[in-house]
Structures are given as C-alpha cells and as structure tokens.
Image (spheres, rainbow, N blue to C red):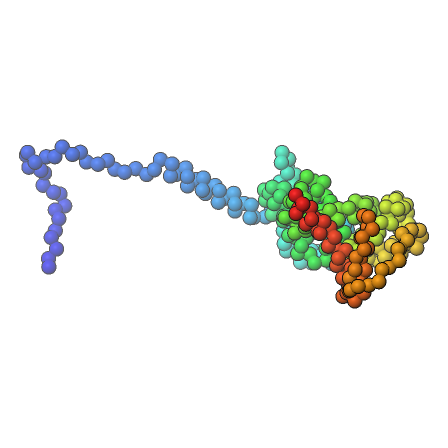
Length: 309
C-alpha cells in the first residue's frame, strides 16, 4: 500500500475554521535539574576523594586515644625491610581531627612507625571522615584480624576505650566481649597498672588465669614494689612475665584459710553452705569442671540479678 505523503508546508486554515485554542508552549526542563545534577556530581566527587589516598606528612599524624599494642616496635624490623625494598603496598587509614589541620591514626600503626624509623617524611594514607564509633570499630576489626593480639593488649584496649568515653555496652558491641569479661579484664589491667604492664610487654600466649595470679600478688605488694622485682631479662615478654610471676610467688607470703573437714562424698559434685561461703567438691567430675565453673560464676551472678529484677 502506498504511504500517504504529508505536505511540508500545510495550507493555511480556511476562513471561519480557526479554533480558539492557543498552541501549547514548549515544555521546559525542570528548574532544579541542573542544580541537582551538580549536587549529585559533587557528592560522587567527594566520595571518590575519600577513597583516594594521599601522601601525608608523618608529623601531622597523631596517635589514637584507644591504645592496643603494648610494643609497636615488636617485629618491626621485617616490616621496615619490606618497606625499604618494595615500598608501601597498603595505605594506612587516618581521619581528620576537627578544627585542625592534623590527622588521627585509625589503622596502620606499625606501618606509620616503620615509616618514621626509616626517616621518611610522608606516608600514603586514606583520609576518611569517621565518627568516634566508626573509628573504634575499624580499629577493633584490625585487632581481631591480628591473631597474635594478646590477652593483656585486649584488656588495654578495653580500659582506654572506657577512659575515652565509650560505655561498656558499646565496647561489648564493637569488640564482641561480654560485659562480665569486660569488667574482669578492666579489673586485671587496672590492678596491675600501666607501668608494670608496659615493663612486661604483651606476653603472647599468657592467658587470663596467669594475669589474675599476678594481679593478686601486685595487690598485696603494691605496683611499685612489684615493678622493682622485674627481672632484667630482655627478649621474649612471655619469658619475662613467667620470671616475674615466679619471683613474686616465691617471695610473697600466701595466707590460706583453714579448711573445714570434708563431708563424705555423695556424688560426683557436692556443695556445702556455711554462711556466705559455698564449698564445692568433686570426686568423679570431668577434669577441668571446676575451672569451667569458676569462669562462669560472674555470668551466673548476672543471670540471677536479671531474674531477680
């Protein structure tokens, strides 16, 4: 079928056939479209800028108020050799300090220390605006990724986070440590004291029980007297811890309460109540049961108090 052709210039309307309708005006673009696009582009540009890294002067980077590593120079020689031969592979993460031209380290303390030790003036860094909570979470994630983080370093993180204004609920959320353990770790660290902990070092592989034993000895002697007993043994901090603990346990008198006669056993586990004392004895209970029970005492008390409310 032949397609009808439309006239290029249509004939003018015949007299008397004009309509009163006026032609519709041309539709204009929304008034704020250009401005909105500019804002969107600006937002994308700002986000891209935060993802980029810059070379920052190391002298403008301050430490975080959340202290974790006890000895930042531990094992640093290998990292310094890598930076010297291969350069910096991973930027550190910093956040700008409010009302200042300075920055605060979030992750990458060892890289920053190694760069300073090498005498370099600048370091590659991601600069990102972060809240206190976001910075705390990022630092906690980095610490959890470090399998060698010791018990006392985690306790130090908790204590300094609480001193920085975080609540125990926030610490529990960010670090994944329940509140009863937070209270226990805080008590151990505060009882031993910052000076003695720094003198000992991270003592990797030394668990909570040994640190609790040291805390009890320090509470008897006093932190300064315990510090004066520190063996002059450079090197591995775990060996230094064991040497100090052995020295203090060998010189500190220990008074033990007199034990009442044991009642005849009536099962694998028996308990005798005497006023505010509860004596638990085992005969054929699995090995390690008493340790498990001792670790759970604070949790049991917390559960009881919740049910009593």
